[in-house]
Length: 244
Image (tube, rainbow, N blue to C red; front, side, top):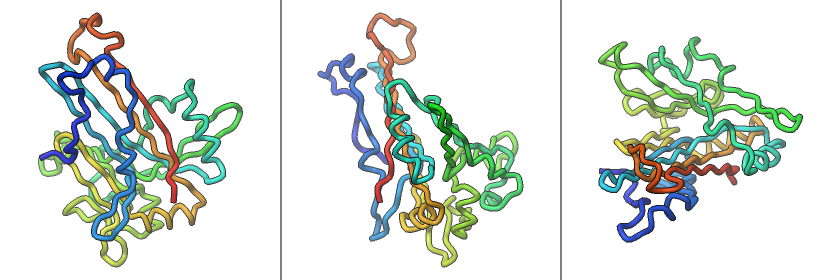
């Protein structure tokens, strides 16, 4: 069963070339999520859909980072300009040599890697990532073969006093209540944090959350014939600031 029930591929009578060049935003309605009265905010997500018979494919990624509140609007204007993109993708830190239970406290996690500077037009912006990729490589241990999942950053876990629940890879607060939520299947995944905890962290550190969508559409997927569609590939990106 897929987490996303909507189909974003073109219908059988739709012009595939027009579908390829049409820019779309897929996660706009998923940033805020309410479950049993609890508000959640999306930090990371991804999905793909494909039609093997028509050789078309769609991929979409949602990522986020934090920036000083005083810099958010200036940085956003720069990132959404037609001539500038943040290296096409945000380089989220990854850890391959780490046991999952160490995620919130291990000395092997360098908190400096959570931060990155972006320079533009003579001004430097400092951003930091609210999560990292836990990417255990299966050949190290068959018992720990879970692939790659996002986990809350070490600094955020420390400040909010969050502990990892190894049973479902979610973090809990000091009362034992669930603080993060990871949902995944073969086609998509979603990683949420409780809104009250995120807002507490942002306010304490004078930060705002910027989120980023990157989508790519492929026509004639897997073929080297570039004459069927022009273009046969197109990507789209968009940055937004989380509104309270």
